[in-house]
Length: 83
Length: 409
Image (cartoon, rainbow over all chains, first blue to last red; front, side, top):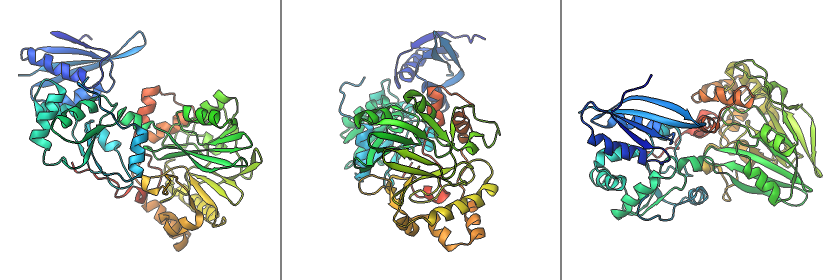
């Protein structure tokens, strides 16, 4: 089940827009083909990462998952740098 | 957080500005589908641009949000954003809108943002007195963003609540402020567009919840409701203090719809007669069977005294409010200006039923689930409940929703 990734970003507890702003910065530091895993508690991040991946030139949304840790939902996004 | 936190409009401020027809321009940075489903609407069309914040990030191309806003606005939006008008920055929850406002201010735009975003606006309740005397007080409790109306009827320190909405705090607050003891909670029908607070409010206050038994069956699933309710019946009288509310069974929008009448003075019409138009007959999935019932019920209501004040269950636009922000009008007045009542007076039964069936707005798929929730057949968590209720009600005929959007992009 587990999606491989190269770097992890913990954006739990951050409000919009910071999970996406920080993910965008981290993606810029990766090599093409590498995957960033982002963990967020902001539910809005699910639709936002989908929307962002559609319009951003060099990212691909590989998958999204929702994990439940101690009763709280964690929204996990895997984003690949494409070039 | 941005460097400085300037004042933001609260939902209450926003409602006041909308009611005053204040001129401002909306920059909404939510996702495009969220904007399509639920946007700010005023008494007049509001000029608005929707540009999701992540598109601003990409268009601006800077690392930080505020810097990207500045670059994006300079490159892409300068021609569309007015220099001489206040810009209201709006997002989902009121965080990103601050960054956007910060960027716009850096460029010299007059800007304010909406505290709590569209979530807070969607969940904001306003209370206005229709009448307030010791013998009779009626409070209209509205959820302005959704166009939902509910009522607290009080007499001699006793109260009945009609069609309470999902969030119960506004009712608890009002009961406490006015020193009222709640005696009954009534839903005029099984709602499709919003989650009723009726069952929960009755449970929290220890009083009974009333619903017509025909609406205790989901009209599509044909499953009986699992909620606890007392059955309303036509002609039943509720006593509250020294006032009486009479139940009128008026099937059409639902099979179990009732109106509640206080003598010749007030008529709580639920989803039958609204201000601008009338309700749709198709939300149970049986428009052709229910439309003739609806026609018959509306005929019955239209024969009530002309001076009776109509207090509806919904509005479709803030422009339907009177100068004080209240959604109320006499039957006589509505016979002149309500789209549906005008046609009702002009057409015979067949012609009116045809008008109803030709005036159906788009069916909202979420409404099937909302009816399940209200029947106790489905129990969403807070996020799911909020998502089901997103946007304005679409309980009236199609004409009520025309010419409301001012979106320019």
